[in-house]
Amino acid sequence: MGKNLKSILLFLVLSLCIGFECREMRRPLFTPVKVEFRLLQAPRIKAGSVSSVNRGNLHLLNRRWGVVEISYKPRFDFESKSGSRKKNSTPGLWLDDVVCGVRVVACDRNNRKAPVIALFSTRVDFWTIALDWEEHKYFVYIPPMLIERVMPPRRTESKNIKIATDADFVVGVTFFHKKWGVLGEGIYGLKGRSADADFRKLMQLVPSENVFHGSLVSRANSPWGLNDQHQFDLEKPARIPEPLDEAAIDKAAEAAAQETAAAESKRKKSSSAAGRRHRKK
Image (tube, rainbow, N blue to C red; front, top):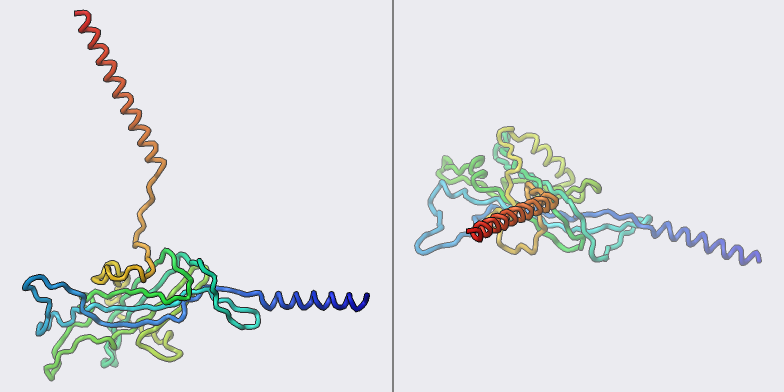
């Protein structure tokens, strides 16, 4: 009897330990976040003899869009008490109300006294994102007029034309959720463990007159807006319109029906009175 009791107690202890060991904590992650930046001419359509070539025109040489390409892998990360991680394969997991902050700093790396020129930024609110371990993409764009505003093309003393290049821009991207905090971050243009801190220092050096919050354009509002829409997570509009007031609609419909019925009743009474007068004659 004693041996059986010991066996039972040992079994219960092992079961309890295994239960605590296998109990997993989970939180959403969007890592790794990869950020790329390119200056590109917008896609153009030629019609008849109209040419889209800007060759030789100094004023138009810098009319390129700044394209920020963000790649990320949304998932729930399961971590056991022992520190081992497991890939979540449960389908149908989604995360609502994810916020993405994108900041682009324009730099003049040849100017040691004033290396920072401007800051472009935006905030993107997503409706919902699938936590599917697949690669997701999102794009934001700097309009060419803004780039030309802070980095106009110019001729150097050697008569070469100096225009902005991809290396003149540094980009920081942060995914955030009000419950889970920072989901992932990515930096373009800076390397090393201190890249995030270095980027924040750069933002602090931007002159206040060259800070353009909300200036980045979403894919839907760019010349690339009609391409491959199914590959990208859907952002909320800047201002979500109020939903229809169903009660007000029903009340208005009821009032219109009553007004129609009253008009019809008035018409019938008028027609009946006219008939009586006609019969008397």
